[in-house]
Image 1: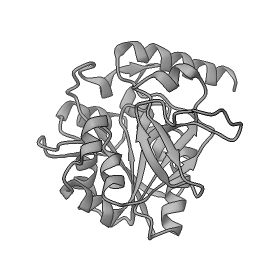
Image 2: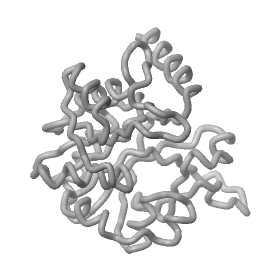
Image 3: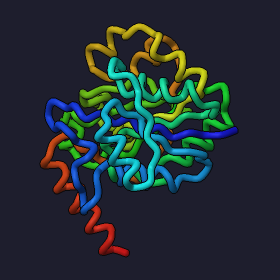
Image 4: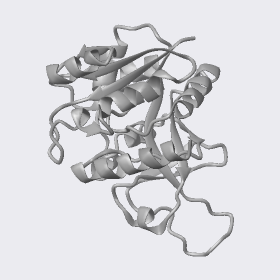
Length: 246
């Protein structure tokens, strides 16, 4: 089986226009994402899916591959599905274009799992929730899973509600990296949005509400998405600290 990584990247952003081209430690953000994804094992190709020629030109300038997609795509997932239709890879990994801290060992486990479990339509990552501020932050998505690691629910709220304290309770942050069996990804855009998805503004809830299983793999790594110009400084500091540690 083969795997394709697609990185959706759009220029328009209410809070941060031109975000994929923002310089982080001297490189466009999209280049950090592309280079991290390109080092993952089991991946045959990495493509940036965009509707803006400026992003395409920037990707090609650093030696990457970009595909122009329809400007009418409703979401990044729709953009990834559009690219996947033209490729025969069995597994498709959607890496968000605003995740410059992505590491190859965050992608390879998704590829390996979906390759070995063809009946599972979708998989993603979770990491232990490390501080109370993240628990209360609606921009940090939380996930709870069953005993086998399959998602029960995703929320921007602090879930689960802890009526009784227990040492067995572990809380997880969802990392927005998705792996799909190709056939399910191609079907997903045709599924109508669901009430919980619309209430939480979390697209993955569409799969859960329609009865599809999502496997969550645990990772010790964390990541932050760049949503505002202020986040650039935070990421640069993290990259500098990582380089200093060797």
